[in-house]
Length: 262
Image (cartoon, rainbow, N blue to C red; front, side, top):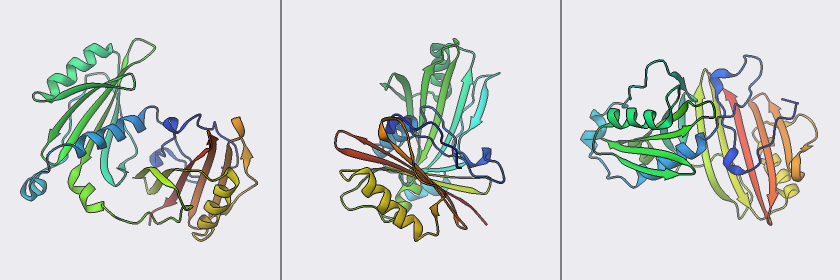
């Protein structure tokens, strides 16, 4: 983890760790385009849906959707939590144009379902028992299309409400996102934070909280584009990567924690 990867240009292009694709001797984060938009949109939409009864929750199983034939199907990140909400996410790449792909998922979802536009993407959404499904569709440059199918579990979200972060963050910090993934024996948790402190203050304070977890800098921090800082940490408990970016008197911190599960 000593080599510098491309620093994210903004918080909306944050990399999400996919542990199943990491080599056995080194834990590495993997970027997934547009995943954060689809996940957070699914969480926001399902939070606005009706709360199911306890009987419905116990009887429900994770819903699945039929995908187009001859499409490429990739499960993203294994077991995932977005801000405490359990998620299952599948990435579908098809040779169909986006209108045809949207028509396929309209038929698969059936009625009723909702449709909207978000960040240049077309979104289909539907509630099923204690789950909420979103299908985020975009055209690809090669003429094909892509769908991110996200399923959110409302019962699991309520069970996780109020749990501690397990991390000491600087005073006055806002938690923008908390993303977890467990796959292939590797656990990943990524925090996106914002505050008014300088890059150096954030680096010092977050380094101190990581040191209490047994994680220490592997080398001096690397300065990236526009003065952003990247610092790798390692230790017997796992690894971490911290990216700090300063813009308009505000610092954004992207902290990814990686560890092996017993």
